Length: 486
Image 1 (spheres, rainbow, N blue to C red):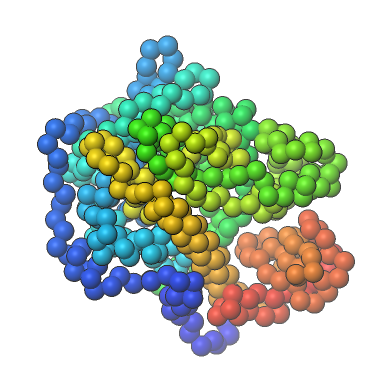
Image 2 (cartoon, rainbow, N blue to C red):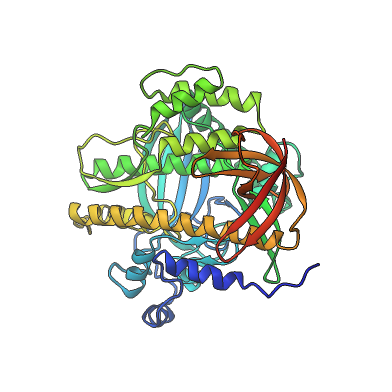
């Protein structure tokens, strides 16, 4: 063990937040405002749905729960899905100090070292969280999953709901995949096991249908730090599993139903969009490197089938191919949409109507969507004009990019700390990038990416190499290697 000056990763994270234009702490005006808020009153006439067997699935340590789910079978083989979304607007009025701060940051930022929540914990982990406990106000979005996996939008309404079971991705996922025991809470809550199985059945229908429509199954590696006592103990890659897939499919369905409701109500909105790939020619060229031919014009179904074949043929390199495709497609963005205008669509999800409205504790655009829904449900005018939504969409696009830069930088900084005592060691690695901008490799273990500063000549993407660690710099997020074997 070599001696190093203590590295304060939390201080680095705060500096990174400020560098990219965030306010990492809450100003006094917000703290005073939040301190005066009590549990939100339940509006008169709102149905009480606490008798339903609602549950959530999230990370084991998550407290800022935005949504809970419940399913029922319907005649003719359908499965009705209800997604209850926390009513955040009831505690965060538009133009309040808390709202202005949330709008400025635009999103919670998860660095692995420290989380910078969009809303204070008193709200996001308390009054506006759907943790198990007393009834909480929510917006319920309904839709029916038909036997073929297509969906039929249903009602949207306000209600009081109670989360009966806080489930964990890993436990539920392992059980659904047949490699783990049922969660212990199933023994204590009759009917919950059957409820989760019904939700899984609905999610499988949804996923199968979207796959047939050309949804892209992409898999990228992003290793997050495991912290213990302020020190980085390991880096782990979050694994996609059946439970995460369940929640992902349910949220896609709920967001689609939300768009259908807002369109029917004649309200402007913000859609989540992935337009035609910005570099389809590059995607075609990438496929050609594998001996495959894609159409000259963008075709999500053809791309989806190509990716499925590559995943089966070479699972180890598939994350790197996925990352290449993600970059060539381009990022998702927010765009305003007027009633009656044709929707933009989401190329990667193979759906036409999509927004972000299921996580109002964590993303500001979801709070905007919630306010639009509530204005329609109460018969009031839209709280936002088209011009408002244009400005907000542009700003939130910027904040999303900035949050990704902070999170990416902090992953590199944490990895540099983890490896600082291993200068001179050699590792097995895979070349993940090779261009005039630099040559990069990802270690097999730990899953760290860094730049090859010596011996990089002639390396190509996908090549397996041996590298020696020559330098780490947590303050700049640098990890440098020398290639010593091919």
